[in-house]
Image (cartoon, rainbow, N blue to C red; front, side, top):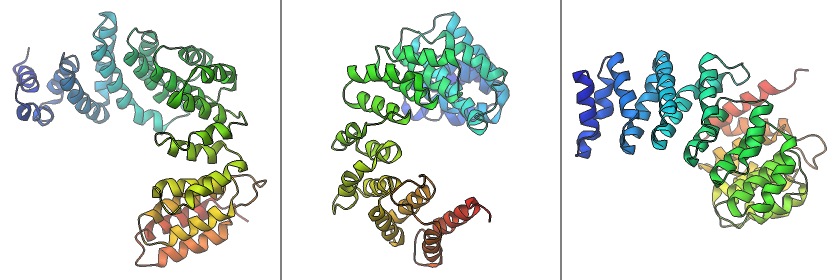
Length: 351
């Protein structure tokens, strides 16, 4: 083993934390070849803390030097072939997912390249791994690659029966991304078996796939502090005007979290509530941090709903308010208002 790699390994596993914490900087000081070889060894360490440290540096390395990604893939291939420790497998999958995520996000509609196809093939082999954390990381990685197709959809449907609830939840999110209405019967069945947080995820998935009459189920989640914010957003995205009174109770309340009140007004406005529009305009003009959320909510709602909504926020009026905020030198979000107005004008259909 090269002396520089030996020194890095010794530093990473040193009994004193103050020494271990200098490992990332020491790695960055190595020549690329030795740094990459050291990272592969650290990713296979039996110490979980060392693996997590190595992952951060390895992702940074892969994004700066894409030629490191094939080495990571070869490393994963060897781990699969040798039936490696699940902790080592999952951190390697996560490292590759984060390393490749930027490219997949930048070109979501592009066909996969050779690297992505090789990674997807490895993930397919790990799909039914006995460790739930490995299975979870596999689906998460396949989602980051924007994987699609009947075979993947069938795999996600099967994952709804996984014994681990986190795997079931991320499979539900994948089916939502695929907009697979064929998944509705399986999601209904899964909802009947689930409770609490997991059941809520199934309800949101069904609503996003076009299933109606789920407003009561979403409103039932409002008292739960862990589900409240997600339920507020979902009521606006997938709800019905019948949810407006419950949303008004939230944004008109004198007490409560500011972000929840803004979110409730946003959802109510998406459902056509003029009172929510007045509330958001008032909050947008206030000279505090809340104004930024209100401005963002107003812009989201301008063209978000079809003309059959009871009320639609008038674009010209919103632009007038945003321009006024942008001119207010004392307003902390005047720059955000100016940028929002420019964005809305650029989206306006030409005459």
